[in-house]
Image 1 (cartoon, rainbow, N blue to C red):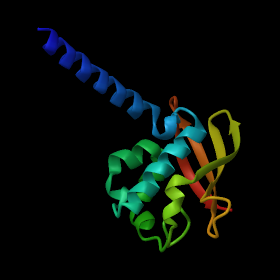
Image 2 (image 1 turned 90 degrees about the horizontal axis):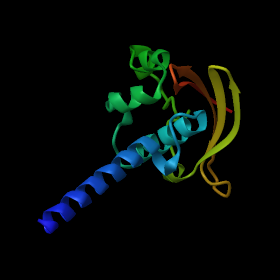
Image 3 (image 1 turned 45 degrees about the vertical axis):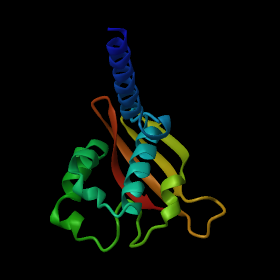
Image 4 (image 1 turned 90 degrees about the vertical axis):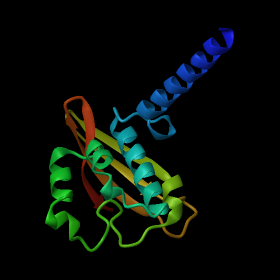
Length: 149
């Protein structure tokens, strides 16, 4: 009986850890803040690319990070026909970017926010700088636009 109780307790503890990690996001950043949303999205997105997976094929995860407006456009013919990757502003990427999503200046104005980010280590030859616009949909910040700097 004690052995079964320990197994159940262990399973419950593992489930709780998975839930905390899932809701806490990558690197402990929360999707409830603009900078947390951007950090989590880019860490996931770039890791998928590095693993030779197309993140756009995971519509559920993509749409969870994108505003309704951006999600609709991104999955439209116009969004899919771009010559470059919309989220990195380039046809190519640096594998080191996934481990170097650096959050910069943040500006919040009620239900909109702007986050400047750089992808890549400062010592790297190839650093991508982006300005990410977010909107608050309900209580959740969502990525609404991406522009190169």
